[in-house]
Image (cartoon, rainbow, N blue to C red; front, side):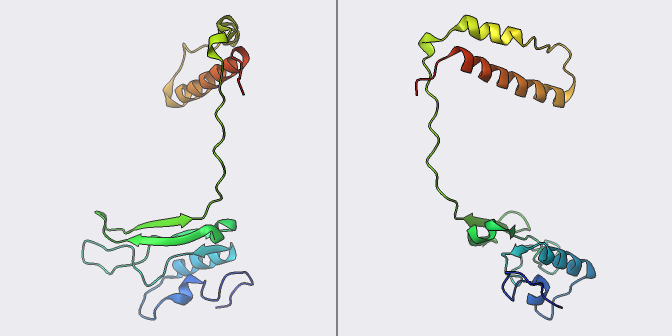
Length: 161
């Protein structure tokens, strides 16, 4: 197999790291090639199985931790926990994310709120909720009502900061 010209280390191509005793299928090579061509990075060690069939079958590595682009450099560790109630091990990736200060919450002067203006803003929207049908319509209505309340609050209640 030829390796693509990329920044991946020479051991990247997953199928190259398999012990000779491991069976592979043409489909697995197709997937591995596609991942390589699209600059995905595999963080698992292939020799560390993540699936332990309860029927006595051969353990395999089918749970994968893949990353691409800038995220690849952010992965600090990959922990595999085999002590689960499932026949699959759990994979936990730790990322080094930049720490930003938490955004400051808006503080409002609720005592000076213009509730008449708030009510007028809500009523002016003339939102008709009488014909909601199905989950999607209801969720869309909830989202629209939430935005309307936020707009009315911004209009009628002064920010302190």
